[in-house]
Image (cartoon, rainbow, N blue to C red; front, top):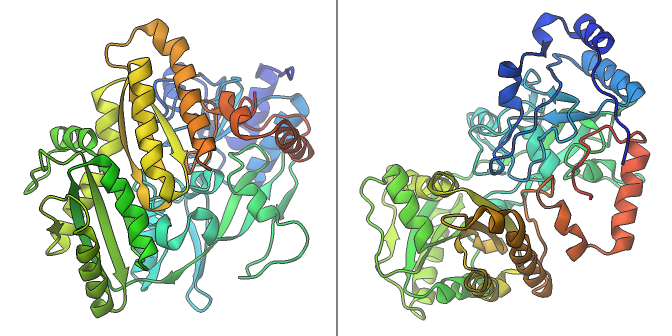
Length: 468
């Protein structure tokens, strides 16, 4: 275990000199909001919160912390679900909230340069006014920072057609722990110039360097979209339909799965005007098609209707206007919040090849029966990414602290056996690191740790994450 230094009065004096009074927080009540993220109910207090406003300040702070072996946890909006922003070793929280500018929108090359504190949806709305599209759309898009999206290679519903955050990052400007600043690549669509450091940073969860600028790729905004909600009498059939649609040549922009409990909890939590869930449906699929050719989209809808006749479905709901479409999407995007409000929970971000989705969900339910827990499942069925929410309900505290980890391990082993892995878009962070050995070999883990050591020799950046 690394021997870290505590933040001492001389350190605070240096931070104050670099950042000024408004660039740091020391009072417990001020720091409490930085002690947790959206992961379960964890709370870890930092010793100090630092809020730099420019690259020079950030580099100076990092260099000092590196010299003093003070742990640094970089924090965005705190919407993560794997505990990646938790200061589990104390030390410094380095908040990126002041790095919140869109620096350039290059309409000639369909690119933009942004700072990591820009909110995802703000970038989407800004470029949409120019007829452009930044597709990655996590459920927390209205509050999550782009820096956090990069750190976790976040996805979202439209990753199915357009790809994850990784597919839209061209170049990154980063600061190493020793204060060195550099761009990781080039603002080009092709890159074959040595190791791809840009892609190494994406998904590294703040353990290698601190991102200060992001160069993203944009595409033209699709003019039309159609949305349908399909109730299935059997949950397995809903999962089987997913693979069939793709095998028959359809290309939806989103294909989302919600089991009955997810629908019911959400309707009870937010209320969905004009929508009554099908009481006989074990699951529903939200299917969206988009593009610039309305006739082609309507043809895909018609083909979807024809293919779904092979299954036991209820009345299919086709959104008639933008209000209907937004209402259906609100239903889907509110599931996570509704589940969190219903019980203490643990969320597992599993992913398997989509044809194995029926076996995954049936296996999860069987494991639930074995251990006596209730699970609520939903997620991005089109790319096999199933969010499994295990509810504490009336389970004992002892079970929740100990035996539940055996159950989660069984779920992850099932994922591995089905050709999948333990996280599709939420990352490993603090809560999943104990399971990494289930899906990564000792050689893989040692290589990852060695890469970490090259970038961060003193291991000050986001310690206590990814690896046990």
